[in-house]
Length: 283
DNA sequence: AAATCGGGGTG
DNA sequence: CACCCAGATTT
Image 1 (cartoon, rainbow, N blue to C red):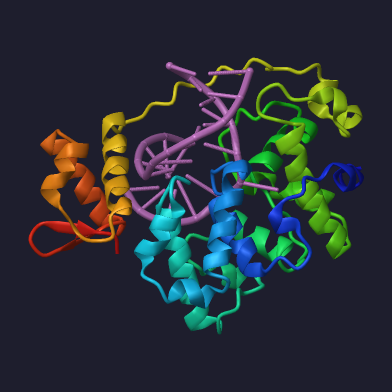
Image 2: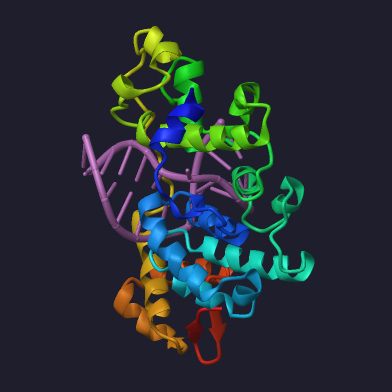
């Protein structure tokens, strides 16, 4: 029933176009790691126009990937994606590998992304579990809103049991479940009245228990201002093609201690590199 | 299991 | 202003 619903209600997204390259699927999945679809689409188009093949990206400095990443967030993903392009060029002859095992060996590719690429780019039959599917399973199968700690592996058995036997149908089922979570079974105010699973949903049958979730207060140990400092320095370096003197960071981050922590962290993560005379630049 | 890593959009 | 977003990695 999810597959039928998906056939009618699927959004027209770039990575669903016929003939969309596997490299494009990999780039899109990286960008979609914790970044909403609507903000990924224009950036994906820029990337694939500029770097149509993994070798095209691999031929450029990693810093160019960080620049082109712009404000998608979590810029380490840009570094990982560039490292992916290098690894694909060197170890896989420039072609995105098609099996989960090989995909998992790539930097920044975890359990979700490996399965997603194998399924959506190559049509393999694997269960995929993302944040949307986790929520749909929690509600429709387990009968409670998604209050538990994120643990995709816990939902794999349920998805495996539901997965159609046919490869193509399995791929559409995965995409359909994700779409259902994105458009209908949403995190806040789900649209149960138009849900194709309403009549079999365990959560609805049980009378929507725990509809008002009391989440434990997220305790953050880091200082919010430190996070801001990282972004400010990175933004400064993205905007300039040449090395920037460390003293100029004071404009963006006035507090010396905070500035020092930000620079140290960025260097450790490889997002910036130090050159001579207290100057910094993208790698 | 919990913390970290961004930035923008939304109820 | 708190929560959410096609997660991955480290501790």
